[in-house]
Image 1 (cartoon, rainbow, N blue to C red):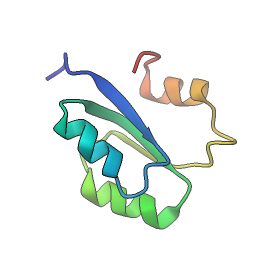
Image 2: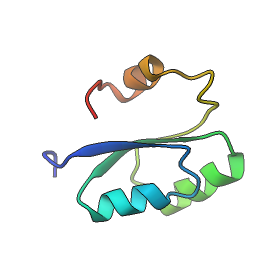
Image 3: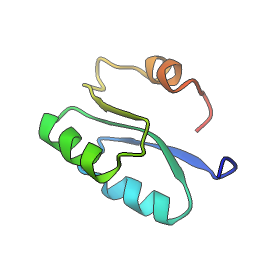
Image 4: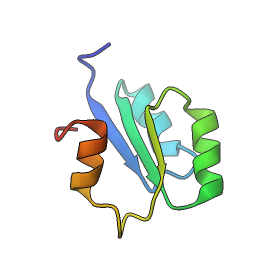
Length: 74
């Protein structure tokens, strides 16, 4: 459903926030974590999330993420 509110999950770990947000009716657009194992588990738990990134958020800014997901409103 395209009209659902959206979210991004930063410091996502295995996806606890995404799970709660999706149960509340949100659509997760992206998830970011710097831990390789957490990203692997997240991808397994949420294969429908289009952008799951292993990135250090101190070096990956909001403008770069907005360009990747092609949105500035989340």
